[in-house]
Image 1 (spheres, each protein chain N blue to C red):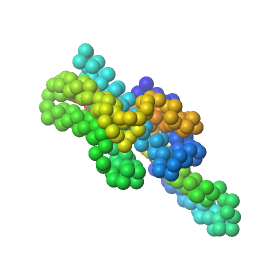
Image 2: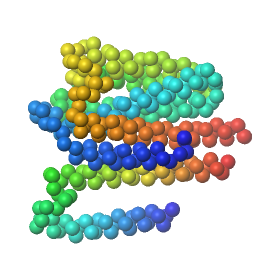
Image 3: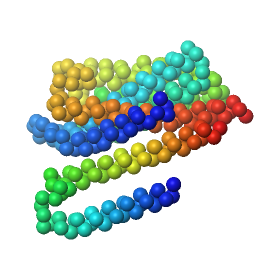
Image 4: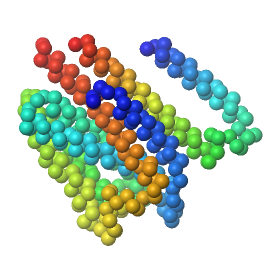
Length: 72
Length: 226
């Protein structure tokens, strides 16, 4: 469980680093996908992340109750 | 059904679709009044649809309990009522945010706002009533009876009373058709996002309810074995 959490944090940090590097070249290339259309894709990414996070949380809660039901 | 995963995955996929298409789908710009805020249709309105479906499920189990008093029916009924009320509160708050920028103030005493608030207060009394009873059987029986009465007031306060008078919401006096059921007014590409959004948000509410149900059932069984 903790390994998985650590993995997720590591993956997130890696993603953020790549993203930071990517952003340095943003100014020179106005064709960047994330900054096009008035940067609306940034909002989409945030909402998708929140929904994914909530569903992972619900899934883990679900599994926890399943274990509880089995143990009785 | 409680423990199956396919519909939970479906809920996730539908809400991912809603989150992406809700922001990206082309919307018709009519007269500059609503502008981009019409995208709230994919987030604010499904709260109410979800609430109505969850509360309807709740009253079905309340009636089931009254016909055959098994404690599990009461667990189902309470869980769906709780999630339904949470959705309603979220609908009220998101509506106030939208209204603040659309109608100039968060609460303008619009008949539909008032009706929704009354409906929620009636349901809040359901929890007060249950909380005030000690005996589990009494709690379940009186709670179920009250649930039927609360449900009987739900649709009049949301759909009938607001339409008999002038309303800022669509469908008030003087406007044509039924805004809730006549989707013909909605641009077809928005309809393709709206209905998946309703289903996705509702399934999420069902999932949260089933987790509450399973906790309640676990406690019920445990108290039998002690």
